Amino acid sequence: MNKIALLILFLLMPLTGFAQQSKQQIAPKTESKSTQEMSSPRQFFDNLKKHAGKAYEGTVTTGAREGDGFSDQKLVLHVRSCEENRIRIPFFVGQNKSRTWVLTLENDRILLKHDHRHADGSHDKVTMYGGWTANTGTPNMQMFPADQFTCDLIAHGIFNVWWITIDDKTYTYNLQRVGSPRVFSVTFDLTKQVEVPSAPWGWED
View 1 (tube, rainbow, N blue to C red):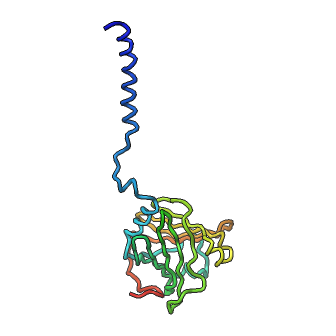
View 2: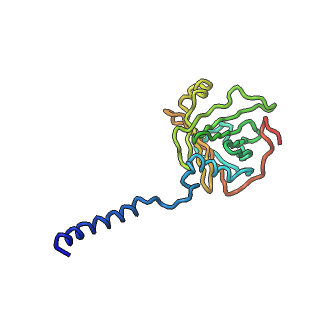
View 3: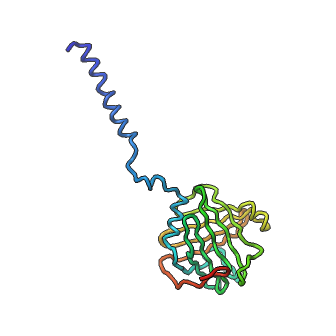
């Protein structure tokens, strides 16, 4: 082999090694298809569905005030209904069974609505307020700024932001009015189940 051939071979060897190394770096990690396709909103939904049919007791952890109608009452949530893309969670405040949180998953966004009823099952005049998630959030937290319906329904509703968090131990429901120091949070202990309550107003067992 002449000197020119040896020189060409010497120059090509590191390029070949670099190409092989590049292929190894570019090659995608071997993850399951389901993991790759699972969005944060869907994972959040699945985390809620793990508690289908279960009930938990909670306490006001931020924003408690004397006479607020919450702090001196037994607070219970019940993950009562879990459909493919809709979860309904009644929220009981003492003997008041008027409240249900309704979460709907659509096009990788989640809509939170507050379904408020009277004891006869009819809708309250202030009901179905809430909003869509503005981004993908995380599997453990989703935020819901007020939608236009809420802005039209509630005075100063344009400033409302809700968020829900969930992990292995707790579920929190939170509300803040932007520009105000007022924050309200209720935290439920997911490590201790309580007796499942009867149907909320407007529902049937």
